[in-house]
Image (cartoon, rainbow, N blue to C red; front, side):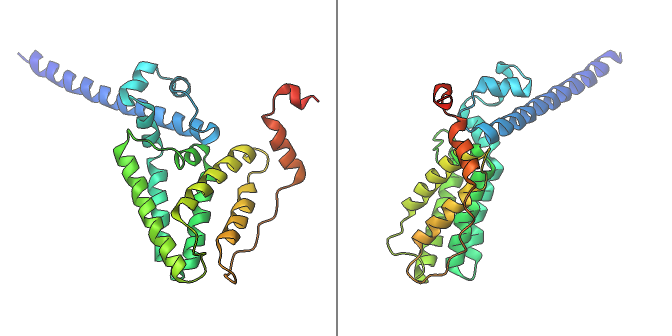
Length: 230
């Protein structure tokens, strides 16, 4: 007479174990994706992620049916930090320095993770919540720009589209120099901030330029073998 109760308990335990196993697999996939994206960018295939995670493709696709699903889950925390950057810039008493802080912070986020550098210049239309956070950050940046412009320190002809160009430029520098001259992006952004400043506006000191040899190594690292041998 007690057998049905035993079977019910076993069924509940089995279901709980399957849920725990599924959660572990999901976390393994996200950890692997973050690791690969951080060093290689968004060009990594789903197959590479499944191999890195040690799970089958079917398991990966059960959790993340599309690339945008995986990318948005892998970078959810970074997107939250991206939104927070605008809020912190708006909280600055000095609106001009809030603008500068924002630009440097976002570019530093790109430099710290090649995948996120790509995310900031790649739309994910299949991920509504993720894109809503991007829109929230962008709208916050519009406020940052208007506040900075009101100080007279930001050039009148600076537009929000210029930020997108900055992110594209910085993503390219990060991708090219990350392994050999990882602080090169700071020099680029220092020059760009000076370019955005109105005449007489205070700007941070220009960072030290990268070493010639490091830049040369960066230039030859991904060159075709035939070119490197000449």
